[in-house]
Image (cartoon, rainbow, N blue to C red; front, side):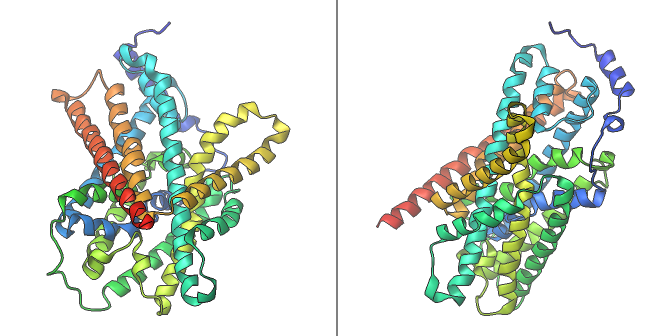
Length: 441
């Protein structure tokens, strides 16, 4: 039988219980390592797709849109983590993951929504699972695309379809995904960041290598392609599924929110880098941009060859970080059902099975641009925009601020997320149908 909570009691609990003091983390991360993991979660293959997003929106709309979406995504992460901490204080728990936060927010919300608490948790779990399976598929295709372009150029006698390269890379991916702790993933994240920044620098070298013309570039793009811009930028910006594992594993979680904070520094850096590469990448290559700007680089210069190698390795080292979200969900489901003596064997087998499953999807649909758009519009809109807006509204229903500004603000966020979801999916489905028709002609 549920008991109506008294606001005074709630405030007292907030004062009496500090979840940070009760966290027992086996291998806590420093602020620098947490920053590296957070930046790597958002600063992945998406940054190299940003120039293509600018070609869809036009450079003027692209600049404004990237900054606005960066602010919205940062705000959604902030409110979700803030709600998670408040729920921890209420329920006297040291930490909660993404799905548990959704459940607890509904369980401590208005009386009418409390019966939906378990449904909210299940919905959040499946949203996380499908989102990061999609991300792993994208990474598989991007690695395969980059490798194929290199080998096709230098080993012309052994040209293979991209699907074969997806299959070849399943072996090393199965090996690297056996790493089981975020602390051990941090060095790989740092290395991946170095490789990605090096790739970014090489892209800028080619972008600024010749005179840049912008007079023939559109300030405002075709309105029908704007949903594709939104989908790509949301995919590139969002890393909310990794946020709770990163925050929960911090040695000093107090430093995650605030100003300056790990979150603020990470998202500011990401937004600036995205805007620079998106703007000047579009100025250089215009409307012939591909799903990753590295695929537009020349094949005969050694810096370009290095960039293609670096991005392949960077995405390879990033894969386990996003894979961590998937395996965490699957492990929570399997762990109570597996005898302890089979735990290690089950872990190895499950990790390999997930990698092979994602590889199978990549083989069936090796369309990099379209998979990025579908994951961004459908999954990340739900995970990074709609769910945080709903969760904060439900949890703070009794105190929505002056003039209910929290309610109206979150209504706008949810409507924005729904708009991105519907329009992005429609445009992407049209693109996939068009591509399939071309192949059958």
